[in-house]
Image (cartoon, rainbow, N blue to C red):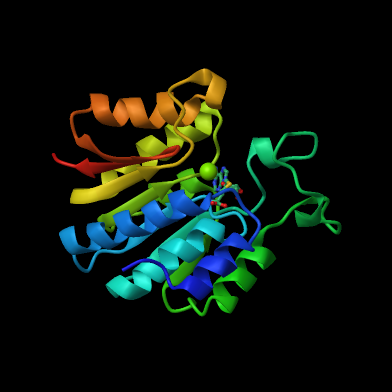
Length: 212
Ligand code: SAH
Ligand code: MG
């Protein structure tokens, strides 16, 4: 079942970077992952203002599970002032840094998804280091630099249960389409490991199934 149409509208009205068709594909892949690995929670790395989180939260509600949405809410390198994806509205003037947490919180609230989305506020590698629960679904859309992407792969991919899904956003095999780290530091190593097989392609979204 696709996302609730009202929530889809809400997601599309939320600040963020997830295109509608890729959000729909993310939703479908998450529902399938829940059927493959019932009862296990999901993790999203990189929620920003909660746009992609609404697709995942709606899917988690439909599947009867929860998504842990990990983000320090200070923005990636590419979201900072002077960079391409900067938005001055998400800067907290008191601290002079980005703070997307209030936007994220409003999005989850307004979507009615507070029972299915658990915000985890912190640096992804720190959270990953203490994580122990097997995941049915892992969506990586955090920092897109080389180090952050590699850390997310190494820190989180081992937690995907066999039969579960690793979804990666902003995978651009052709450098003229966008930055390379999600492709080079996450997608390629996952395939090369022999532990993941490509299941679907939708725009820059790749879903991989854990096979070993
Ligand atoms: N999924 C969102 C976009 C995410 S943008 C959407 O579809 O709209 C990337 C997010 O990753 C930013 O909010 C940034 O704060 C977060 N991020 C980047 N590096 C991080 C890290 N090391 N730990 C936690 N969050 C990080
Ligand atoms: Mg993205």
